[in-house]
Amino acid sequence: MLIKIESEGQVTLPTSVLDDLGVGPGDQIEIIEGPDGCILRPPRRIDYSSLGTLRDKIRGDHEPLDIHVFREQGYDPSLRD
Image 1 (cartoon, rainbow, N blue to C red):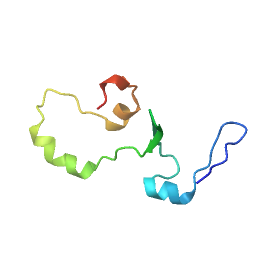
Image 2 (cartoon, one colour):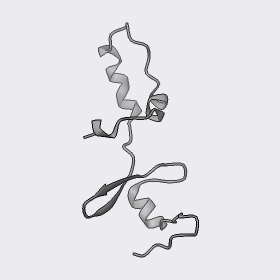
Image 3 (cartoon, rainbow, N blue to C red):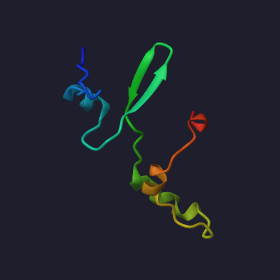
């Protein structure tokens, strides 16, 4: 599949590719550079409904975590798996 690069460096991915990745408007796609080229990977999704069962296991002396703020913070890529 060939994709045209626009003058501003932008590309438009076909809907079929976006559907396969499970992403839509406003989502982000991670690009991983490797020795054989780049890989597009959708973001990891969090099932917030499954987190409620963990509430009883967290000690009360911690402030509540705002997952949306946490996800927007920068990270050190060397710490990733």
